[in-house]
Amino acid sequence: MKKEKFLEITSYIDEITKGSEFEGHIFAVGGSVRDLVMELEIKDIDLVIDLPQGGIRFAEWCKEHNYTNTVVIYATYGTAAMKILGQDIECVMTRGEKYLDNGSRNPTVRFADLKEDAFRRDLTINALYYNISTREILDPTGYGLKDINDKICRSPMELV
Image 1: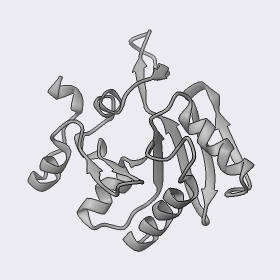
Image 2: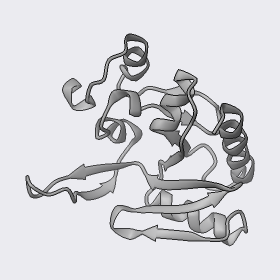
Image 3: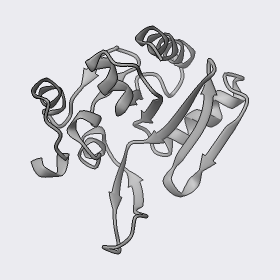
Image 4: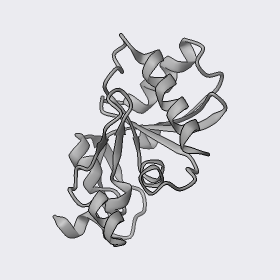
């Protein structure tokens, strides 16, 4: 999708959430923000909500208020999927992860703040957040924007 469609969808989400518990708590995250910064075609929109069970609660709220028709819940990971303005949207709460078994790909998840969420992501360039309400790009690792500029791929775990 073009930048304009991304901005239309995020502006719409900002508008519908004004005065709700979600106002100021919703961020686009990951590849969509990276691609926005790099001025590339945006493939999809992932949202992170910095409230406990925020992804599921936001998706259910959208359905309850007729902003979407169908919500699919993935309770194990605290995620939900839906369509807004015809675009697939995945929602999740900010989270921390812990792998109990070294060979496992299935972590236990819990609510965490934005910074901890950023440091669990795969790459610094995917740990960028677009605040839906303020339209600011946040870089909690302090390296995502720099790494895009310097054409570097690194894990946030390298910075810990």
